[in-house]
Image 1: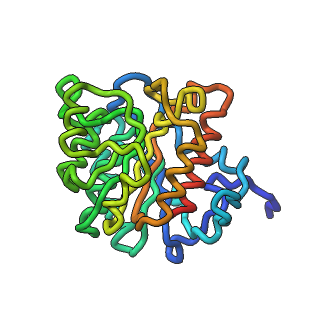
Image 2 (image 1 turned 90 degrees about the vertical axis):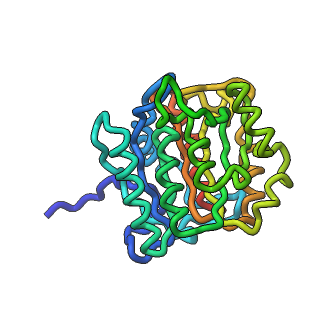
Length: 278
């Protein structure tokens, strides 16, 4: 008989029992529509390994992961080269999570994976709003003639929840037309109080890690200078403690662009801290 101990490839601090969990962590290793540097499909696996370098206790939130009660379901398997089938697989699995009375925490992968997650969640919450952290607007109608692109994910989301139910934080790059869209619908938020009109909504939080400055997060597909420092992002998370978060994801880590592993470590801590406010 083997005696071990054996290394655990799931997230540290997870509840190994799906049935008794409140939140389901779902790896979404897809990067089929990236417009610059691919590689975010490798993030979920690397984040799981890096999680064992963190403590299960968050001093900032004075909370331990065991009180989050999340189950790591592992990575979904996707058909290579088939974007639409991939989105269907995500949608179906997230619907199953909510049908079981649980919430999803997605780990991408590129940002397009948020679309089927939000589509699924919207079937269970008709007053859903989205809080979007990102360097980029992601409000294009299409990219190079393709509507299903990570550059268009929030535009698609706006057709599900309504643009009045989207707030965007950290945006510093996009087309003129996209900034006009943000101005028309007042989606861009620069102060915490700008989120207050969503307090009576069910909230899905989506974090594109390039919201952080490349000095903090160089391991991402589309780094954009002028971004947040880590503690600035944590300030927003602290404010979100007062909101009803029914789902979340963290996307766009591309670990191989940062050989030091620092970007992966940062991404992992972002995930731990966001779990603490759910």
